[in-house]
Image (cartoon, rainbow, N blue to C red; front, side):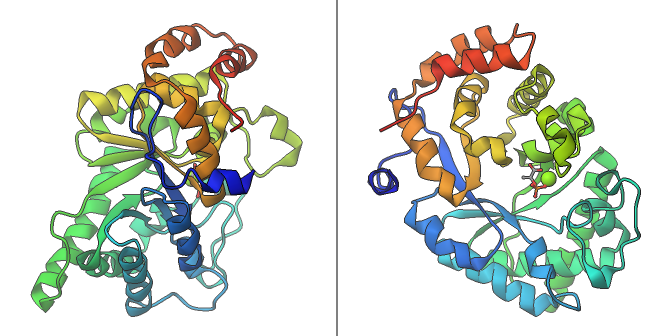
Length: 325
Ligand code: PEP
Ligand code: MG
């Protein structure tokens, strides 16, 4: 199967009727780049930088981060990479940050909340990303944004980092694109406002499903309730895609659902044309994409919209799903 899928790598990433859907990779380390190129991904849609910070006893210095980001950008050879700023807390801890024990870690001190509190660390990371942006198509993405205020505060730190680099005469891409993860229900509900102040959205379905349904994504006991096909999730995706379109903001999906072939008809229905997923999923999704029809999108949505349950949603999706070579 994997061997026959490999033959698809060189084919354009399009539906049967020519709708282009970019398939990018989620990565956590430089090591994965060989596979990214091997699957002919359109780029890296999510670089999870927290792994640079883990399994060590001190924060990575600017130079060290810069070297990694630059290597990723250069090895992608002109393809874009979305670098997500530090997303620790919740399920990912750093001993040297001495995060407090929390009753509800996923509702607590994590991601952009830490960055906006520890602007020293945040600025170091942004400086490293900016400097690397001189060597490739780097974009910046903030995780766990819940308000316009957070976005603006993050951008102030970014502006400060740019000013410093200007003063030091260090080059960076001045028009670097800045986007946010849409992974909190609050962000979905104000996506119309957020869309006006960012270059792109990337929908993080892993956390979005967790927060919409109040189901801990790490808790086995409630795993059966973790349902990405719940109609509430579907409505959140629709609202985000519509608000992004309203303001000409690019939107992609980077949660696990992006790599699930059952969900492909949803993206066609919502007009989403970029998906980022684990490298192993890319050719499987491409296989489905090549057999799908983009022109089915509006009809798929007409059938999905009234679905009262996850069972009804999956029944519709099942009728449109394409699999097998
Ligand atoms: C997500 O929440 O969907 C996501 C892609 O980010 P992470 O899995 O790293 O939280
Ligand atoms: Mg997330």
